[in-house]
Image 1 (spheres, helix red, strand yellow):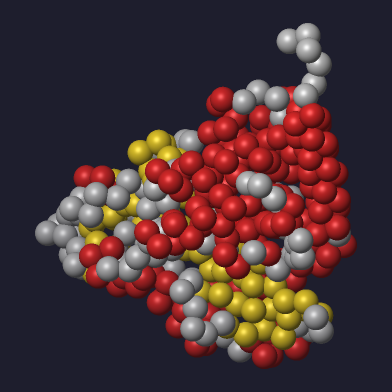
Image 2: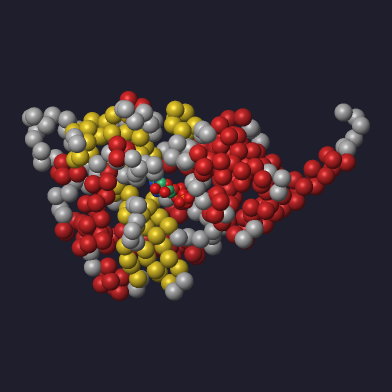
Length: 350
Ligand code: GDP
């Protein structure tokens, strides 16, 4: 103290200031989506959702579903760059006495964050006592088989060209598709991708989605993925609301960075959100002026987690959010981000 700022301190301060300006600029011009564009995309998704509800009620009145609803970043003000995707959540109703859930860590696969849904009481309630028995594989409810049921319906028996012409969209199922996805062209240049996401909500509120484990091995096929999205997004938002913080802005900048750089495509919103939530446990200053500092810190934290090969979920630390990345992907992501530490603005060009 007392000797004043050194040359290098000044230089660092200048760099931070320019990164701060660069981030704000990038946010305005590339990250943020115009309100009008978001509204049109939401409208298109809602129209499709309404059509599907009518169709399913008419065609399969006895399929035990709760009302479908739309969700995702488009509905949380967290979508970035272009308003181009949403999820259509399809909650299945399971009979409590016929199905039980087994956490992944208690199975031979030993994967926290994934679950098996086992059929119970087959001796008293034989096959077909439950509607969803048709999706039972080896005694377990198969998310793959559930997706196939919807795939047959949505891709096979709905007349999308006819519906599309009524709604003035071009609608087509995306093939091939890991999850079941509809492409909706609602303008000559604008497309919206709507993912069908079958979902189970357990008694304690745990949500499981029919989104397969990425490193598909046969024995992983029956695993349901636990979703933390609602809780982790709510926590991030609540923290920002308490102190007028920039956590959501920081998340959106990071999401845009990953969306616009092919080398970072593998990082998803959940990983970035949780990395920020973990950072929040150590770092209190999320004022707007600290945006550049926090953004750099986020990059550094990601590099650290990648080096360790492990990113614990902030809401359930036993879950490793990097568990579906291959070693090579981890290395490549780590390398790209490590190089970016000396020139973070380089990743924020379009
Ligand atoms: P973005 O797609 O990067 O903008 O991120 P979102 O926050 O919208 O997350 C969407 C992704 O999370 C999709 O890949 C979904 O399959 C997955 N996901 C997991 N759980 C949920 C959930 O509860 N709701 C939605 N909408 N998506 C979920």
